[in-house]
Image (cartoon, rainbow, N blue to C red):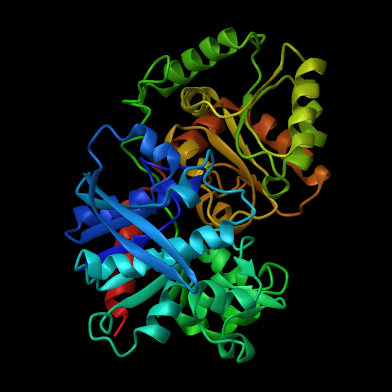
Length: 476
């Protein structure tokens, strides 16, 4: 099959979070399965800066946004068997960041319209256009409304994946016509109306043939009033075409046996020596005290969604019970400040690196004994899968993909448990689970059984890609 993925980011060219990992890894796995994969991205300033000539300018075309006439440059390159197209426009994309601008709605409207024009320009007729999140959510709308009588587009089917339902692409209904040249009737009919505005995410849901999200549990949550972010009624309407497919991780990048960032590489057979050495060296490098207690790690955006408020309130209990904590991430200013304060309060036991450091992230997965993910909600989560791959026991709140991938030890399920989990989103629940994890850590035979189960967990992309392949083929 010919499959086009339309996204605002993808490895190895543009990344702000897990979306980039998912788009690239899924496309790579589907390429291995024999499909013809293409990814299209904006030609951001950061991409232009790394273009060493491998991304060739292959043409240009005009994009009309109502009364606006914009210019699109089209670049192309190849990586790991995937064809990448990049849509360039200096006004919209020659900026320091991927997101966060007052005109993001307009920027991605241009991108969406340009993708539609690109298809004919390069004579690409995909069987499936797979849209990721809200940014290009209007693409199936403009094609089905404005090009429905054009045989070039008639055989194209659409799949939309909801990665983060909190971002819904809301904009003023006036912009339906002003940006996209679409009738106000689409808003009045309710097809794209959401929360008193137009939503490109709802539009994608309503106009796509199939809708997915990134774990089975999160799919169930999105159908509820409590977990639906307002989308539950929309998704109930299309529930027969809505499914949760768990993401995977790239087993080539995340492999403790070959990871060059580690102080010492290891596998299950030598994990005791390997993890101990990585832990000792990381504590030494960061100026932390060597103890017999467990090392807790966190690699995360420091935002309310990730449960950092619970961790900030619970961190002292880790230190008081003999453990250490290393935090890597950035996000909300107050959270960053609180983690810095914890480091000042416990300089020998707590280290906080505000920002992102890929090498430190790899080392933290390898050195940690317990990996923290106390998320309020987590559509899928990747970090817990990486920690399992490295024999590091995840401690998670049982929500979304965390519930699908981590089996919390409850005192009776040691034969298959691979971490720790709690249900209630409260400080006391997290503190109790930290204490339970530390007690379990001190029981070496039990700890080794859980670590064995962690190493045995399978979270690569092969199974996920097969499920997407089945989904694509199910569309008539």
